Image (cartoon, one colour):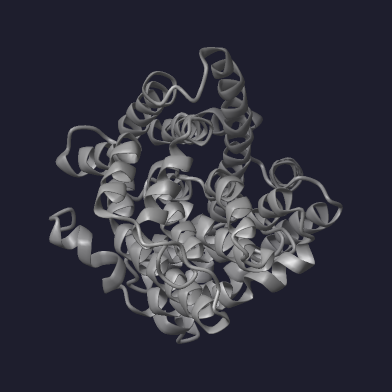
Length: 428
């Protein structure tokens, strides 16, 4: 009955419209102080020790880097490069949006940031070229979700912190699935554009392509710095995040000069607000995880599933359904922080690789970002396109269906996630 009381209390508080982080904190404190003998001092200590992990420092740095790049003209140059490369194909600007989102995802670590940076520039261009608004909105909303699958990824950092998994291995593991999903979204875009005969741009010359590449080279170099630096062992993921923030500042202010020094305090404040919100959620989720462990809930769940004869195939199906349902009511960081500590021990006991499991969770989070009622990308895209959530939901369904098919592949083909870290010698 005790686990039932925990989840019933949490659900009741969330149904009142209370923010997830506060609901988590109140649930834990109410339960600990009324139904257990845990000392207050140990709860206070857990609050502080929960967020003093070195890896958590990567989150504010990646958020800061993403904000500098969003305001610093990097997105516009990436769109020009993508348009020069694929603009002449069917639905050229749509394909350029997918490519630009994939490139920006590789330097920002955030899906909403990717939607804002790419969408605010390319959507007006698509409409002016004669593309239906729904088509453009569907492409950008779903392609923007690549921001948390293609490394660096804030969602991966949160999963790694929750489960004591290697951030470096997760980043490398996300590269192949990220490229595969980008290709599938591009294929869906091309097919719909070809079937409806949407406009194409004139084919760019080699000179124009080289110029576009030269213009966005400073932004693309950040991918090499972060991923190359981690793989080469030059710095840890947290140090890579700090490097990316400094590099993004220099590129935005001194190289491209699209961000004035007077605008830097505004960017810093915005980054601090986002970081504080995430750290508050993490703190309360750490307490919730402590409660779960104290009550032996993950271990009991694992034993129950094994006793029922539930194998890894059925377990992963249940996990996907749970995460997709959770995606209807919560945003990704909250879902990972609540569900990962509960599901992770079960996955390990069933012989599922922690890195593969992490990528599976991140792909589920991507899908959650793109479907109602709380899909964050839908609300961000709604602000850019001035379209209602219902209309956007209809707009994204072809790409959302593609993502669901990809989820099945990622779930039951671990090699897709694990091949690259294995080849690079990052795994034993």
